[in-house]
Length: 308
Image (cartoon, rainbow, N blue to C red; front, side, top):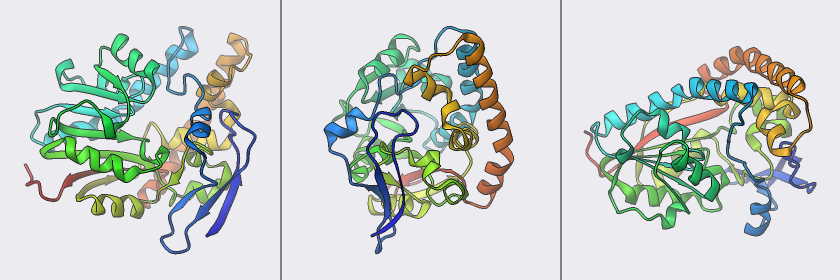
């Protein structure tokens, strides 16, 4: 076991405990050490960890920006749906407030969300009209083979047993269905540049830090075949680099930590953060073109399912 770096919760300050980020000498998988207990891990997720915008000008602008950059994910998911035959339902695991599902523009009957947070599921259904339930995918109340597409955006890195989620998703997919996942990519240039300050580590909430090869191996082991890979996310890559450079300016971090600031200070900090996002764009695009982007998004199908 090789120690790569160490750090604590710089983003939300839920703990002062220090953790190691280590790499297995045999399989080269990167993970958090020591691994927190489930009770400890739960305490590292502050209330409103998922995004719930306020009513002021800065929050409305932030929500509008999120909808704009989310089009990247929306196109990827809709393409997966087309590859699955164009019909059927979509399940978003870790749906948060349901924004992605709502932006897909599909009828409510074809959408379903699942999140571990009761409050997030309530917002998804109550505010955005997306049917959502609270729970774990391995015990989700859905029938076998009932979805054309299952999505998991930034879910697997939080799990003790990501293989169980991949296998559960396979059971829920209809014949010819597609699985879409996205995780931070520990093989990116940003990790080399920022080390322990790289936002993709998100110490101590990310238990495993995947490289693209790790995800491919996991999918292969669970009976999936990779069809498409994308190394750039307009929503995540530039913003992730901005947070790596100045985590204290991250809007969600400030909101969750309850930073005291006037409306003018809030707007100014958000403007500086947005400038960092814009400045980060060329670098994040370049690393993605080199297949070393800070995130990796993958579409896969079960090997025994015939293509549509």
